[in-house]
Length: 246
Ligand code: MN
Image 1 (cartoon, protein in one colour):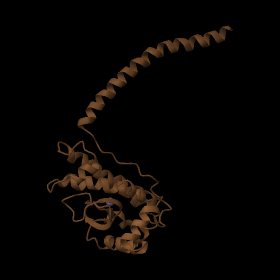
Image 2 (cartoon, rainbow, N blue to C red):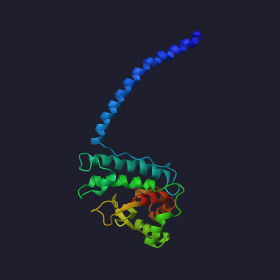
Image 3 (cartoon, helix red, strand yellow):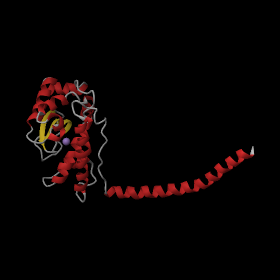
Image 4 (cartoon, rainbow, N blue to C red):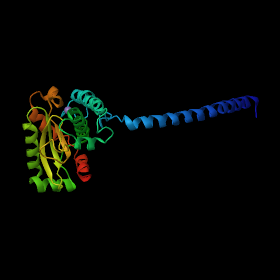
């Protein structure tokens, strides 16, 4: 071995000898930290804003980038933040979101509005995609046909529910307790999972947000145009997956 090579190797070994005990110390420390934060998480589970599954401008021109940015980064983020605050010390704290919004009482206003807001928007982002639209396939297509007659008739019923929702709210395609599809609409951030609080109960598989914040920058008062264009970006594969999971 040449002298220079020996010095280099020796330096690496020495560094290795120094680093090894340090790193094992660190790993002990971090596993202790992990245990501590795990224990902490049991009592302070926080909901988090999910990442949008596409870019802010991906749904344009049907939904513009600025609307998406504000809708996701301000409105949805606000529901998540306020839900976490409303759940502090609440009997439903620590449950999963679906269970929370299926178990609400009439006085749970904060959890109802913000838990609904978090659930509804999380569903909404996932049932849209750039280059969506077209028509559903498979079992869901059969169920739509047997319930509504054909796809166009379904579209008409759904669009009407969305257009005629007075004020702010949502229109849904959902599945009832008997496994049958239905269309409904709910005010504010309610949804069909809210047993005892909404008229028609079931599990939503598709929803459209008809709050003005969802379309006003681009469509102003033309809610019907927004609803029509929403059909260009529906991710029917995701809706079919929601249907299959019930
Ligand atoms: Mn919204």
